[in-house]
Image 1 (tube, rainbow, N blue to C red):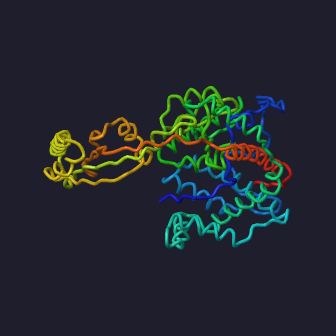
Image 2: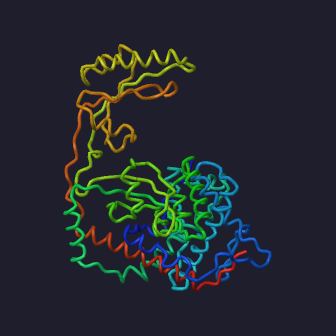
Image 3: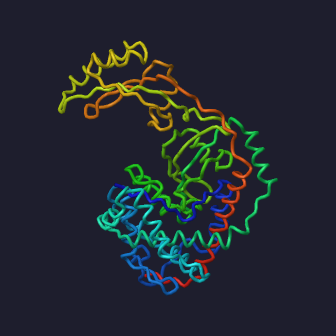
Length: 440
């Protein structure tokens, strides 16, 4: 199983317009470095032992390996050796930031108490292992990680939140006038589409572009093989949304770079695109959701459904399976609405189960089909010899009401979160610049 870590560095999402303004470099060669440099000495920067000393605190190779194991487990598969080396170096950078955050919290006399860490650890364990949280210790050890590694990550995230609450949040203010302007713009855009996008942004200059592109292609390959987008965004993305798994939240396309706009317009929820170029670097994106501003979402409709299904014996031949599907399809077509489902189902040995669900909770492939059905109609059959074949028949539908939209307080909170996140990135950059870091 992949451990669903319910912890994030800040719990805040960034606004798209501010995000891409800050990720685009001001000058791709600000130091006037010649393009044909010659490295002196025998050091090979591509072969490095992932250890570091941060203001006197040691990060060991074991620390890196344990944290990498969490990412590999989230990806539900083995990583190629070249990819594993890139992951290790990124994890090392994350551990350096985490160490700086914990040190700064202690320096400001707001250290994280062990009881706080244990409480959050128990919450994550309960989410993943239910009534026996102790199983998580065994799971972590079994995947090559450790409870101490996860607790260290939790400590860093709590420390960072504490620092933000003390040093940044109290100094962020959004006026009612600003919030009302946003609300008015939303009202003016009522009915237009907005998109919830996940991103992995990698900075690139002319000199670094080939290597960055190769890295991005490796990430996409891992994602298409089942890797966790959230886990890869947290470890690799260089945008301020990395701490929330790359989630940009819902945005209007005009706030995004042109290349992202063009891709998003053609995408379906759940679809992955990239890598492709945007100002400042390379991006990988996934469309998480799509909706219309201040309009009810049809996918929130409550559907009354009957599932009619048949199973097949193990080892059924292709011919027998095809004949069974044809007979099943003919029987379903003969049903005169939902009231006839049980009678016809019994005649062909089918199981009939009734339930109420929201359209959104169903697989993407079925949502559009069901929302286009009339009462008493059924979907096309779907399934396999192993899983059986079934249809869903629509017996009733309660459409969602148009909501009142976000309140003034909702808008103010979102704007404050965006500004807090932007300043938090500057704060972390200052900690790096002031630190004594020795890597080996």
